Image (cartoon, rainbow, N blue to C red; front, side, top):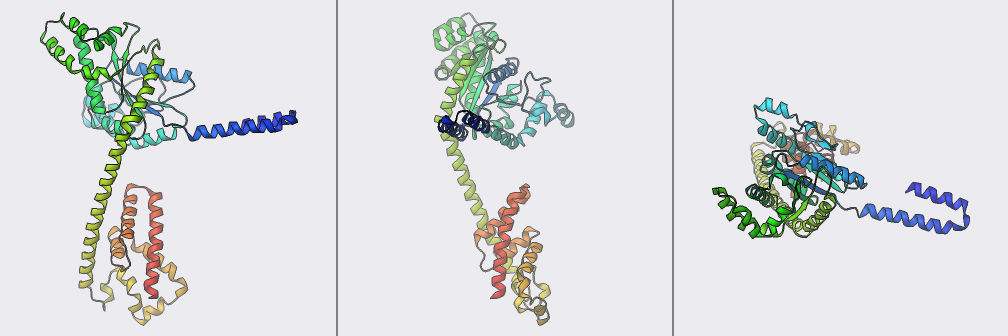
Length: 440
């Protein structure tokens, strides 16, 4: 934008008569650029799933190259810890975080167990991946996610569910199931692929695209025909006389509803054909996500937040009552004339009734603010001391008590900035209460 303004000034200096027109044009360009940056849509997360050998990684490489040729570079994430070489440059690679072979050695696992454990370890830090994706949402329209070759370790594991739901709750997300068309010419194998695709659809509960890969070997029209015409598929099944064919014939009736709403596209990861149609299907899936899936996620998020808020209030009420009973017991056990038996907070509250010697020692009212603040900092080192000090004050409120709990939780989580802000606000309010007590 700055370069455009400099160019406009240069043209104005050459042609003075056109100054107003060029300035107006530059202003319009700047306004358009600002509006474009403000209305930038969140990136679309494309989760690529499929059987081993179906061509998932090759398809991700072809999609990445296609988007780069369209001047729309994607943000690429690799979730396969066992892959040796990637044919594309990944922005986030699980292999940089988790060493797959070391996990196998340390836990005594096999290949599949090592992949599951590596994904579980990576999922514990997936919130950081979400932050990286959010930072790139102004520059990348698509986020391509390549999953492990063993589809079951991602689809049916806890880490796969965590990753999928984390993405879908924040960004428009689409699941792409890659099917090896050349290995699905047999109707029984085709039905097995369709059953797995149907199970993934109902497991993820996200917009679903069936990408029939390797159309450079065999065209996918036969599979589309089987999905659209039940009788043609039955004719192909009649050539099979095994028990599995009878089961497949029964299951084909069940999947008619699944076929009716399924988005199908034929692609070739080697030749790059069918990619334009693929992204058209992705756009349709995004519209479906915004229309049907996002409201459901928003409803679930609100209900979860409401349940958490209710649970926090119940815990606060119980803790408020418990701390009150503990404070009463401690006050009944301690004699008010014995200052050695008083707790730290009791010393603060009863400073006006101490001996004259102690009263002379703290009679400097000009320094009272700093003394009380420093005293509070010393006394608020542990959770128990702080809660006792807050709870026993007559002007304490539940809101102030809740702020103390929040501050302590933030410190435990390691959020130094938010804990510092809460702690500063708490110190100010308690210092004011202490000064009011002393002045009274």
